[in-house]
Length: 240
Image (cartoon, rainbow, N blue to C red; front, side, top):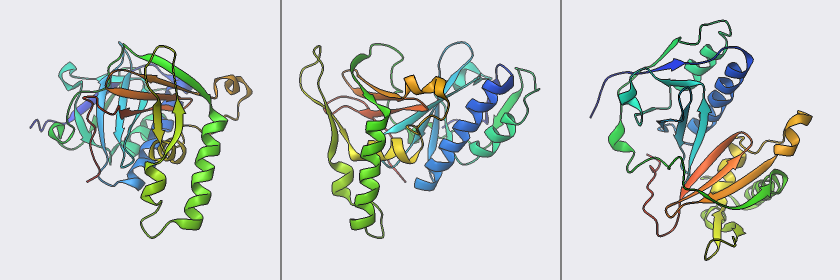
């Protein structure tokens, strides 16, 4: 198992970079509250961006895109502990004037063997449907009300998490695409479907659902969620 420290090279400068880093720090902080052993896998997305895939205990992984790339190209796909990242990203977000090639070392060893399979593909997706963000927020609010009434010490009842809350069909796909309550809970609790406060963003307050043979992807305003498609070959980590 590789044990060298992974280092990211920041790209860009200014308010846009700071906003992306702060948002990602917030999402990872929330994921760590769900699972203190959460992991992050790097997936390079172009010449100057990287997706941080964050494990969750809710049957999906969350992707946040940041303006950075691995300093060593061989670290594309590296898996690290999520624990140090909120502090590192927040500190980097506060350095607006730092040059675009500033380094962001991530302490701790790589733990690639704990994340089986491959990352979701960059292409080959078929759009199934687009759902208003408000509809997803309403579903999450309903789950919170049910949790207040029926949850026990362990949190939301498993029946609520396992129940399909969105059922979608596509003219180009056979069968129904089902999104379970656990993924709705992840979108809501991690803030991916938070209602936008800026008027310019309100027209993008949508959740686009796409599929491949093995994956289901939900693209929201503030990040994406990936879950294995039943019968497919996708694999994601489980909570430790």
